Structures are given as C-alpha cells and as structure tokens.
Image (cartoon, rainbow over all chains, first blue to last red):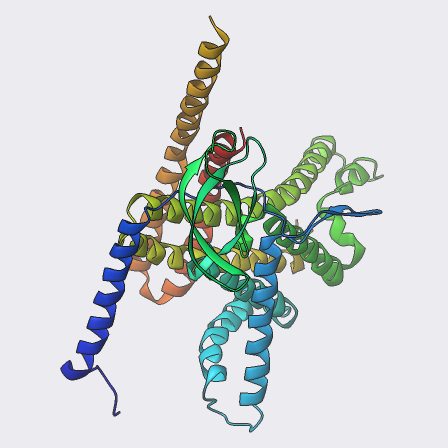
Length: 341
Length: 82
C-alpha cells in the first residue's frame, strides 16, 4: 500500500495547522470571555406558535431541524449505497463497503437473537441504531447549539449582552459577552435561540421513539402468535382450570390462578414502564452529556472540551446501540410463544 | 423570618435536594461493577462464548445505568425547571 503512516515530512504541516487552531482558540477566548449558555429541558421554538384544531399548539423547534438534517443524511447514505451497488460488485467500494462492515455484525446479531423473524426485526433495529447514532453525534459538530439568532428578552428570561463582530449589508454577526438579568441591563439585553439543537435532548423525540418501539413490539407479538399474544398480560387460564371437571386439575388451582393473573398484570405494567425507561435513558445520557460540554466549555475554553467530546462520541454510540439492542431483544422475546408451562 | 430569608432558604434547600438525589447512584454503580466482574469471569472461563457474554453484559449494564439516569433526570429537573 502506498500511503500507510504519514511520513515525517507530511506530519509537520498537520501539526502546524493544529497549533494555529489552538492559538486562535486561546486568542478568541482571551478577547471575548466564554459565557455559560442557558440550558433548558424544553426545546426552543423557531417559528410563532400555530394553534392546530385537534392536536393543540405546534411550532417548529430547533430539535425538529436536527431530525430533518439527520433524515437528509440518511437519505443521502441510502442513495449513495444504491448507486455504489448498481454494478453488482461483490466487494463494494466507497460508502457501501463501509456500511457493509457496520450492517453485517448487526444482521448477524439479529439472526442470532431472533432466528425466524430476523428479516422483520432487522429494519427496526438498524434504523433505530443509525437514526439515533447520527442524531447523537450531531452535538459534536461545531455550530450545533451555538449558532442561532437573538431576540428581545422577556422579563425574567435569561438575557445576554451582545457585541457585534462584523456586519455585511443587512447581515450582522454578533457574539455573547456576558449574561445579565433582563431587567437591569444598561445596554440591550437579548435572548438567544440556537438554530439546531441535539434531537435526543428533546423528550418529545426520545419518548416518541420509545412509544414507537414498544408498539412495534406488540404488533410483532400479535403477528407471531395471533390475538392470543395478549394472554401474556391477561392470563385467565388458571381460572379456567380451577372450574374444570377433573378433580386432579383443581388442586391448588385457585392459588395458581391468582398468581397468574397478578403476574400478567405486572407484565403489563412492566411493558408500559419500558416506554419511560427507553425514553429517559436516551434523554438523560445525551442531555447530561450536552450540559457537560456546555459547562466544561465555558469554564475552561481551551482543550478541555475536546476530552469530553471523546467521551460523548463513545456515549452517543453506546446509547444508540443499546436502544436498538433492547428493542431487538424485546421483539425477539415477543415472538416466542407464551404458554410453555 | 423575613421573606428574603425564606426565599434564600428555599434556594439553599433546593441545591441540598439536588445533592441528596444524586447519592442514590451508588446502587447502579455497585450493580454495574458486579455485572462487569461476572462478565469478565465468564469470558475468562469460556473464551469461545465471549461474543454472547459481551452482548448480554452490555444489555444488563444498560438496564442498571438507566436507574442512575432516572436519578440524574430528577436532579436536572430540580436544577433547571424547579
């Protein structure tokens, strides 16, 4: 192979570029001190609120923009892979080759876990993994959560003093210099709304995915075992046995009937708790990670944030894979027919 | 007690509550440690089953970590919404 490790002559320009970037970073944070951004759980709306007849209030939020961007990335990957595979090459080059190295272990895992239903389960598993992975890794891109627009601060809302960097015709680029209370600002105090915010920090996104996954599990259960799938939750077989004519079946049947009904009810509660568990696991991990990046970035503006971004790469990957794997495992468990005892 | 003292007291107790909530992550911490130890022991006994053991171990660790995340979410709600 021609280009293995970079030679010493090639390493030097890269090192100089890195040192220049670090020097610019130090200069920028010395000129304009870092300000801790305002963190809120609810996503910020970018458009005025629209009142829909049945559904209630609707506004385009900055997390929806992140989801749309992730959709565009996924569509681009799909079209690229389709084009790369058109020649029928057995060893595809380009994006198709890279994605094949990712999809093959996922598919093998699916086949290992759910033997017959792997072809039905795999699209769910892989889509969840890719979507959540792209959305989680968006918080590492510079500009997400930091580029946005300023607006008049309401009383009591967090507001910032703003310094203009440069303006070009009608377009004005400003940056935040300090955080002030909206009431007592002597200059102008403006509130800040980022254009793009990481979608997994929005409870709507994570809980929506969780509800979708759990409902899909129920759907797969009904598809595998028919309507008797719901006997897992409403288990009245013990009651039927308690009233049977045969005397030997009736011993202790009352106790079994009671425990069966109780266990079925617990299964139902556990299934609903899964929605909350899925949603909050993803939300908590990524929200905590983004708050960590904000706080570390505003405390020590140079170099420290990079370490935490390494951690966030790892956490984003693990959370995406865990969400997908848990969905896979629950789907596989739903296809196994209940009632072997 | 003046209203100002009462307001400061409430803010102080809020931060105390946030700290107390996060004490509960000792449980998931211990659980994850035990899970990892069991996983490593299983892999060392039977290296051929390493793939399956790893997958089950990661799954179980995700369940345990979710409990810690619940506590973190309560703390964050207290901090940013309370």
